[in-house]
Image (cartoon, rainbow, N blue to C red):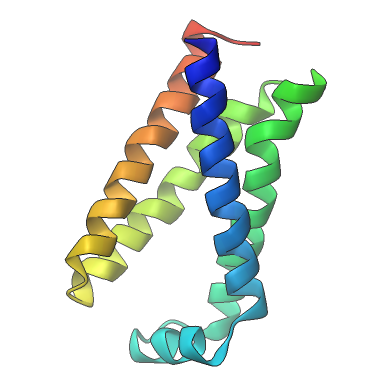
Length: 121
């Protein structure tokens, strides 16, 4: 199970790293989507920074054995962001993206619960 958790954590970290960088760089296409959804670009950059930091939090604390309790905390703190993403995609009638976000929520819950209570490092 430890190997499976590491795989899940690595996939999530890569996903949030790439998405966080995308929201920080904010290409024109992403800016247009934010303007359509009535969310500010500054809020999008804040989400990008949070995702980028959480990506490191999903891997580094367990890997370095320095403050390993930060890994389940990073997973848990990403949950409100992902719930907001589900709501935002639902409002925009983007069903596939909303379903993907729900899958990510499930993976984050697995990491948070297992690393906090069942298999802490």
